[in-house]
Image 1 (cartoon, rainbow, N blue to C red):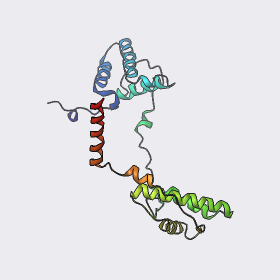
Image 2: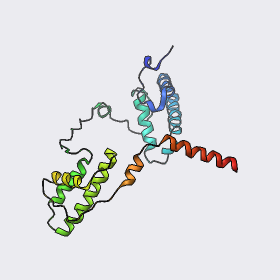
Image 3: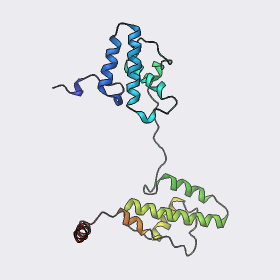
Image 4: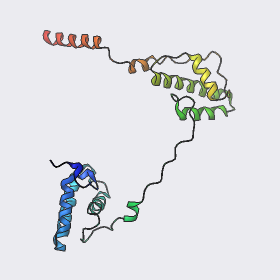
Length: 208
């Protein structure tokens, strides 16, 4: 048996092994003019595989770059575009550093925590109260979406004060939204209810 794992690794797997084999063959053509014609044919075939990108301005240029890469820069032809820099292709990307920000409550995330830090520094009382109410409601929605369970307003207020290190006061008489629809959306379908619904549909079809 001939397995893909036993074959040479594809340089750009999106085009498949057949295109790679055709490119490998084109590299063996002795006549330069014939090699160039074969390269143009290959680029046309590669472009037809992704017609949705044909209107992009540099799409054809990218196809020729891909041809050069897949031929391992061994295809000696009259290239219509400058060849990509081999050194840049071989360079490894820089490592992305891990985020150093610590999240006290993962179900709220860093964005809510950062916004609450900014809210703490607002001096205008009326504006601050409006933002506190909005953020508390968002915290409740995030909690119910993540945990898939209800939560009391008092717990939200307590965690809000913890996140802001006491930098905000909860407006007197503040009542948060219910957000029951979050639990309904996340609730798994009941098999019995689904069975009843399907039987009703079948019976209604028979009557018709």
